[in-house]
Length: 291
Image 1 (cartoon, rainbow, N blue to C red):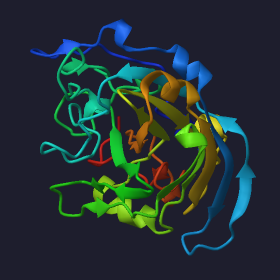
Image 2 (spheres, one colour):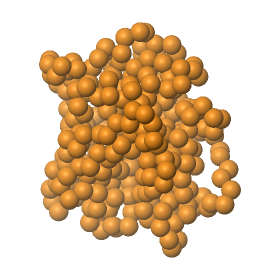
Image 3 (cartoon, helix red, strand yellow):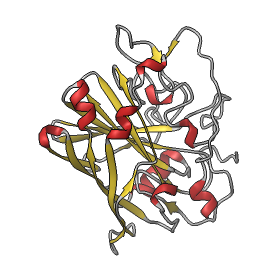
């Protein structure tokens, strides 16, 4: 099972040539802001699908990796422009699409092999040949509320994420705050209908402030999460994005993503759930294939 929780975390990144689009110049990225910003998971609670047996499991764990600040828009989002929001290559900025907007930033491919692609192996989720990064858009928090996205658009079993899944409290003019990632207790069975048994191994939080954004990734390995049957996790954390706001302007919104990899081994028959909506595991790969 330890191999399952670590799957998708090996550093392997392939180069993908995309005709007709410009790749982002290094100057667009300002990595120093990531080092100054702090995003931490302070507490993890877990329980059964019936909502019982909640308890604290961890505190004070920092992000696995950060990228930013990237100048310009943090979209298009997966699931727009006809995308299914299932992590396929080209469906959204984080999956290799060109950045929306004009000027010096629009049209740039910031993540040609997927956001944080050094943390996972390449894969073929769609079953049609291209490498798929696997990032799924969960939704966006803005103006005090969260709007959940739809996962599996155009499929027979789409899942609309609950608006109570992600909550944020701001302090200090939006420079600091806290967040709570609390998926529905039956999210395992909901997502199994559209993901067909794939394992979600990490989640990412993207902060957009002024004309720039930065992203923070959390993996099961970094969080020290055990694999157990039918378990849903909730995450409570804090952040300090003062450096981003001081340089680029006030907080606009916060986006939430999870990533869906193909299992590298055949799992046990029991259903696994690694971090609720963030890390859910349910057996075989999306198309019943083994990678």
